[in-house]
Image (cartoon, rainbow, N blue to C red):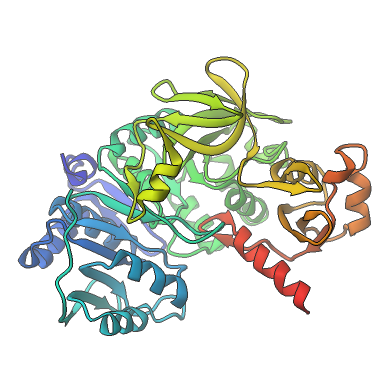
Length: 484
């Protein structure tokens, strides 16, 4: 059964299913948009063709996504945050048969870059461009014919690249069944809900979260841009009662809304946090939300949901309960899992695919401690281990310690090259009043001396990429500082 049938087909015609900053859309209007895109694409026989979409307007993005899937094309949503180098790299790697792109978004000309790529590539490519993501103009680039995907109807998302080069993840549409079941359980989704999802449509998290809200016949609220005033206004207009986003984004929203319009916070019943490690005592600064349920929905783009923990005040060393439908084990401290939402493979990279799987088990890269068969704690990231003078330091452990300082608003820790130690510990801190000496003094006695940050850099804010701290940018920033 195609995603369209699972998500949109059975919702009553006049049900308000999607709310943006500017408008509300019924299920019937979304279905009409799906039909429009089917008519547009049918003459080009898209079965097995890779179709990239850069469509910021959600009311057009979702119907286009479902229409491509319905016609057995392979849809690949791309990030609006890509700029020339990233966009060229991803497009060149994907080598799509068809591209839908807005002409310009946030001052960047996507169509110019994409048409420049197509002209230089010299392959047969259809490019649909639009000023408003609704009325499309076709440019047909002639050239060599491209190979089709052998398994039609799948979809591909690209990771944010916050810790390296973006990777393409291929999924079967069947993952939606598992993911909807898990998300609907923790969110207690109901057809009376108004659920705000702040997640990028270029990620599997965004696609699954938005589709799951629609599947529950609830009203999906989305942001056209990161504008806290408009988000709060829409929360008030719709009586928003549930929210899905990252811990960093929700904290920013709370701090703003508590001053501007506290009532939108007291309306919240459930907040589902995804995509980032939860800092110690995360819910403590949220006195307006004492009746709200906070749940950390743990997983990854490659696996979908793996475990959950319900947050309380003074929550430290979070203990996650494994989802019943998931399997997990620890191999030399690293978490291996099997779930119903596993990606199929990395696009065009069988070597990397083989590296992350072992006998059907996916290697999460998280270091864990199992307390019993179903309960585990996350100790840190295997990739985030800093090797300093022969000692191993888990960056997440240092981050958790620094998060406990009241004056620290946010923090990220990386390893950087050092001539003597091999690697040194660099902490990027957002704080108005602290000094490096304050931070080092606080750390002494709480963690081993070799884990105390060697360099402390204060920033006004941490760079984010699709809601996550962009550690690649932090490494670049540190390297540039060393050259000046």
